[in-house]
Figure: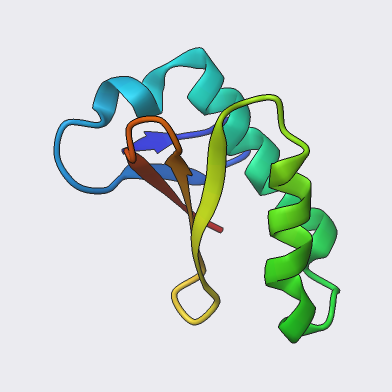
Length: 90
């Protein structure tokens, strides 16, 4: 588990993904996702997934949004090439 400077937590899910999660690109993407969350929190709930997916699809990194759970306040991102996943509590 990694705590970012803004107090958010980056928690690896599953086995063998620590390297992917702690790489600088993964950290940049995690921060990007957190920024997306902060920008979209006032959006209508049924449109939030579309907003996040759109923002992530504009990213230069080869990842996708794999899960959003608003009750648990978790967003997960997945590497499209190797299917490794990382989740962020927000």
